[in-house]
Image (cartoon, rainbow, N blue to C red; front, side, top):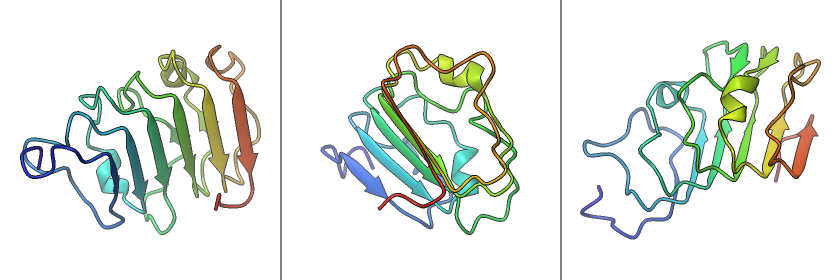
Amino acid sequence: MRTLLPSLRTDECPELESFPEGGLPSNLEWLGISGCEKLVENRILQLTSLRHLGFDFENCEEEIDSFPEEGLLPTTLTALGFGCLSNLKTINSKELKRLISLQYLSIFKCPELLCLPDDGLPISLSRLTISLMKPV
C-alpha cells in the first residue's frame, strides 16, 4: 500500500479488519476508524505522521469498558475522538497522558461514562468536547 499510495493522507474504511502487509503510508496524517473493533487490536504506533485519529465503535459487537488500551495510540496525535461505546466506564488516563501533543479530545455517545479520570487529562489539552450525539 505504501508503494501504491505514497501520498495518501486520509483514510476511512468502515469494513477494514487489518492493515495491509507493509502497513499504511508513513505520512498518513488523518485516520478515521468506524465500526471496526478488530482494527483496534492492530497497533498504529508506526504512523509517526498521524495527527488526527477518530474511532467510531457504532455497530461493534465487542463490549469495551475502558479506552484507549495501552500502547494503542501514537504520541504524535494532536486530535483524538472516540465514541459509540455504550459500556465505556473509564478513560485510561495513563495512555492519554502519553499524548504530550494532544490538543483536542472529543468523546461522544458514551452513556455509561460518569466522570473524567481523577488524575486528569494531558496538560496540552486545550479543547474537550463531550456529547450525547455523534459529531457531524
